[in-house]
Image (cartoon, rainbow, N blue to C red; front, side, top):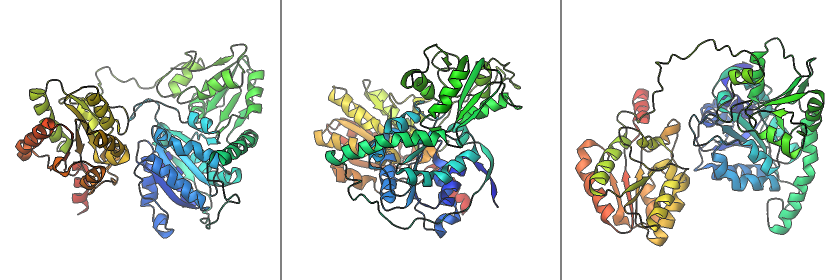
Length: 532
């Protein structure tokens, strides 16, 4: 079949397979997870020996993808927007090294924070790294950009950032496939020092990256993904970025009465931008996420001398949350005719830990012991299912900031005199970015208790493999935790007395303790039983 019904994530994955992908590297994170899962489940992956195992975190994924590009193969690295923070060290420097084989970095942003801590916009990262970017407006465009993006990356000698948002990632549309391409053969770049960023080499590479900026702008100005559509009513012009173009067209099914500049490739196509701004009395910028383009127009390009640019910064569009067809309608002055209103009696149902989840038993005992015997306690938590311990009935945790921060925040609080200082982290998050924090604790013999709630999977994103399964105790010993203070227990009601005793003993110990409540995730266990 040449046409398939695909999620945006799946369209990206299929395009990569069809474009001669040799390896995908990722850490699971909504809304990007389905890209890797699709490739993992595809029979083409096995037939062509495509790498598709999960990485320990986004930094290792980015570095491994760059290593595959080093040998001339096409690679893709995928993550959600906050994963870009973890991958940033290699990501920024990859713009300086450049690439040999085509390399795409897919960042799935989450405007509205459906499953995230913030609304950061990954386009700022691409601009910071001075590399080209794609922003698809629909599933077919996502497929086309990825399918052609590897060749574009090789042509420019740079990684290319593909920025998508939640609604595109998790909605379906028909996608027409292109011709399947073979994988690249192993080959190397012509500059043997390309990837050696010693200062003397890095300065030369950086100058080369700066020289490429004119070619990037020219490519954007000639890109099929950047389209200027003229119209007679010049009172207003519209710049519609990515999925914002779809929302605009929902309000104008028969064609827009105003000139429209559709943006799907960056850096901004300066000729078309100036053409629109010169022609129209005012310009509205529609973009899902932060005011990336609006800020560029007002600041970098200096095109707002007459106050013509409108968008999120001046309140024409909401300053937070997702862009929607309704918010676009209000911004352009059309009637906002929502077909269905949500009845006032419908309340949001807060998420909760699954019935039978081991985290429940862990929190039941932890809160009982701490509240009864240690009134000055604080519990620093992390990113995972167990973050739901913040809600009823537990209200057990006092922080959740970023991946791995539980252990280091607990250490800092203990350094400041807090006792007891407790960290709660999951097994996957521990191997993602908690190990270095535990090493800091060991190096200073900090007075902390680290609870690694081990459900033997990456449960929050659907039950993907966890890098630390079967290795948590060995890792802790290797980091220097005293074996007698690494305590493992099965979190079940019949073991509550044992759990209470262990917690009390380790809370009373002055030094680094690790308590590991271990029981398989109830959801992955169910799936195993169903398969049997």
